[in-house]
Length: 331
Ligand code: AKB
Image 1: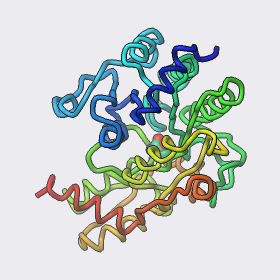
Image 2 (image 1 turned 90 degrees about the vertical axis):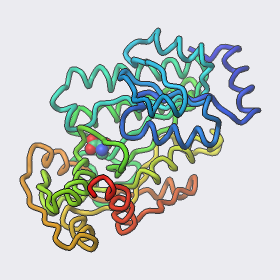
Image 3 (image 1 turned 135 degrees about the vertical axis):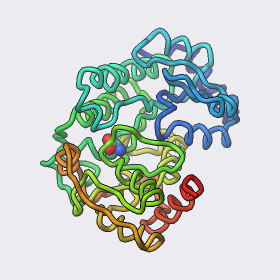
Image 4 (image 1 turned 90 degrees about the horizontal axis):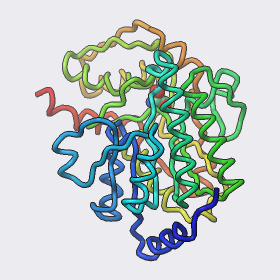
């Protein structure tokens, strides 16, 4: 399908004003409320629609528009896009790696069928579409240190399989229909005011809470499991930056982005600089097998070259900011 004349007209109207109207699906997850804040500052509070299937807190609704959107309901999404004259769609709805493995049927629905719905609608209405991918889109056969932008991808989780499907389908829609699809592969993301829930990299957040609360953390990964991570401020800035690039200036549609790679031991040592009595022990579970198939070091030179991507948080700054943000909760 091709965008209607009306959709194209609307697209140009909005870009003249420089204030796109943006829908964020799955916005009550780890990244949505932060991205809504960034976009509302740039494009106006009333132009950014957070959405999810959950009931939001009063705090969320006080900050700007929030609407119900079930990504499995094509008509519901279509109605929102038309009624609110959406220009950009950021599709965050997904089950993360560890929880998806426990719910393969549901994750095929949400992570694959949901993506089909948003991709088809974005194409039909001429929207700019952002969908995140992840380090989980790689597998044991990929080079793991470093993992380049383009290499073999044979993920061993349903979450990773769905993300490779998303990357390929988005690039196909771009090639065949000109869909303005943009995709960044994220590492684990560290945030202090929102929780990820169900990921394999979640330890790198929980460790800060437990260090402040108990001075102790039992890690579900082995001490030497190296994974790439980034701070949420870098992550959200990368989304804003790639979304603001003119379409014709992007040589590719899918890019690796990252911050820094570390192991649980290295993270523990950094935390100990602020909390000297902090202790960590290890009881690896099913998430260890997932982590072992993922990149250890992520190579984002193509993002750096093509649109000047630069992370601002190294391990030291990440730890300082996480501890400073979370300390008031435990005092
Ligand atoms: C997860 O652990 O599932 C996510 C991811 C790396 O995509 N944080």
